[in-house]
Length: 365
Ligand SMILES: *Cc1c(COP(=O)(O)O)cnc(C)c1O
Image (cartoon, rainbow, N blue to C red; front, side, top):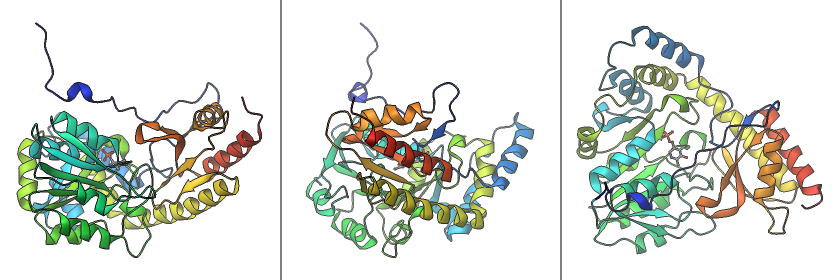
């Protein structure tokens, strides 16, 4: 007799976060978890500091200050917003509340790994929809819907590919889903996207009973360390998740810093412009070296290496790490021979390109 977890839990592969260590004495450029090189807005740091003055008290369990700031900036009703300890928590709550053993949830071929983990943790079955040109394929998703399907996860743009579905396609996906299936639009990188045909999903959530959108403060807002995410959805879904979440799931510093950060629109605009410039520069520079880069609208690029021995992603990763540039292996996402690089500071971006040029010229191991 021994303690046994419920079915599915031991099928989960443990999530391996991006590395964050460089060799002794070498300057570290962490480009492995899509954090911003610009840090948070100064007002957010100041707000978190002020929250430290009262650590003996529980935080506001409703995160009212943060919800009010989100509602104001995005023009939403607070009753449709739920805040989470990172958007990861919200993805988990969706699975916990809507999936039971025997149920299915769909994610795309190269979709964010947290979906599969949370689906399995709920005891349900993940169903993979193939992608086309490393991009979500609406028809492939719809073909896999059954009466057991409860959730469809779409990261738009997706991590680690950086590709996106135009809004018309997202609308077509929603229109093809039965009413009992929730479409989860994970818009972690929405602030970075500069395409006229993109929408994070706010209009669709407002118009439908079965669509939710998740957002994060971990990327453009520079607050990954505080763990802040939020969900916008129909009241029936928001109040369902609200019953199951931890009563104090956001800490006091997170509530204060998030509210200050989202109000600093000028800072976020500047961060998006910085990214657009360096996303473009980095993509072109890496392509000029002869490597293939998946076209990205996020703050990262997926770089593909040749299959020839000695010049693959594993060797490139070791070569870059030795020089302080920490990128992300993405074999777990179905890309054994690619690395994902977050757009970093000018120094980091130029440094990676120079190091890759040196790597490609060096004699094969
Ligand atoms: C980074 C990321 C998130 C954000 O997760 P948090 O828990 O809010 O830090 C969510 N979805 C995707 C696709 C991501 O890449």
